Amino acid sequence: MTNTAFISHPDTLLHVMDGSHPESPARITAIKNAVHASNLNKKLQFYDAPAATQAQLKRVHTSEYVEYIHNIAPKAGLVRLDGDTAMGPMSLSAALHASGAVILATDLVMAGKVDNAFCCARPPGHHAGRANSAGFCIFNHIAVGVAHALAHHQLKRAAIIDFDVHHGDGTEDIFKDNPNVMLCSTFQHPFYPHSGADSRSKNIINIPLPAKTNGTDFKKVFAAEFKPALDAFRPEIVFVSAGFDAHIHDPLADLALTTDDYVWITEFIKEIAKKHAKNRIISSLEGGYHLASLAESSWAHINKLAH
Ligand SMILES: [Zn+2]
Image (cartoon, rainbow, N blue to C red; front, side, top):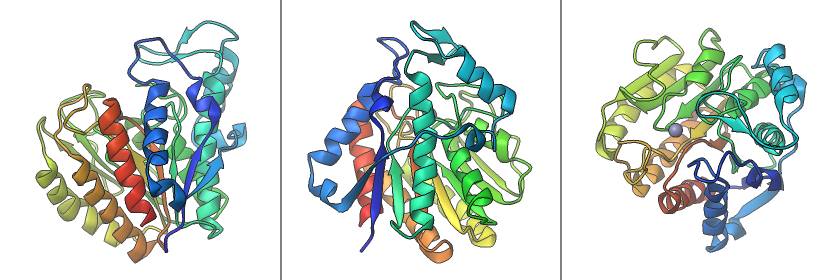
């Protein structure tokens, strides 16, 4: 019997960059509709996310950056943070609750109230670095959760598995010199954000993949690269940057995963967590822009977490 939390917040639907932006509230609605259209909702414990505090954010972001985001948040209209990322009147609240979702997930898992959790919130987080927004991301939610697990729950080893199609450059920026954190990241290369191919280290296991890489090759990478690294690291908790934009139908990228591949990846992560981390898994939504494929893949991921 696995207990799984599903954590979201109403404000996650109110962050709107512009009408045609692919990182849209419809992504969350698609996932929630898929969960509620099946019996999966009976297996889940639903929680509203709290807002992350400034102190929690400042464990991974600079004070100046956290204060800049709070100060620049508009009362009306849009402000542009970078070429891909903008804030409207509800964007700060959405971002704070998306980070808070991962904080709550960490607390629930550490208290033993659930085995694992899926944070269904946006904007995504893994491109946000120590002092910068990027690629639709304002705060790095997974990093905020990892830092909370280390600082508040006093864990010594946290792993992050990032299977989003884009390199988790913000997460790498935050943890590259931290021996308490291992980041395992697969990503299309060469591709946005044009980083990660040359920065592999003892705790940063970056695997660049050429366009058209399919599930068969993806599984080989997980088995040959991530498994031995994670077995040697022995994480006490496993975080997941769960982007579904490596799906073959995704309009923003060119990898070729199918929904079944996400089931396999989730099973792999569960085996790592069972072996080393008392089943503790905290998964947070990153990318995924083909709504039907996002709904199907994230449903399959959450369903595998919950069974
Ligand atoms: Zn992505």
